[in-house]
Image (cartoon, rainbow, N blue to C red; front, top):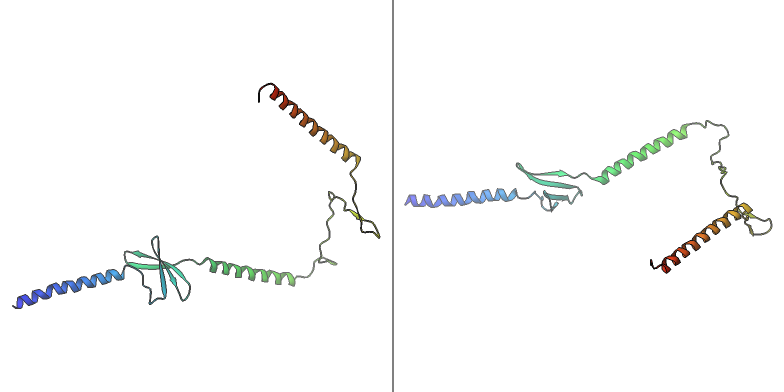
Length: 172
């Protein structure tokens, strides 16, 4: 009878061992969430893990040794660091510039107006009146404009004649 009792304990031990192995395998099926601190979202090669306390994001993947999570680079943090560096550099350059003495005596802070030879004359306002005087085109400008209009008109007439010939000739 003893043999029957010990043989009935053997399948129970196997079942308990199988449950333990399944429990370990189940524990390895996904990364730890530490009592709700982390939120997991499925991704292509594993999971994305969001730390709800710090806001850090990590990618988690299952290697042969188990789950490993690596922090995702935070572009905003990198930009903030670069902005801080540029602001410090700008402040340093402003301090250097302020420390320099003016090199040109009598220098003024405002820029002088530039003379532009191609600039058209501005309309003049007659004294005592609020009317604008607009300069009229020269005779040379008028001749050029009339020549242009004549050439355009002749081309239009030639084009209309060609269309008329094509219609009468049966081509259209």
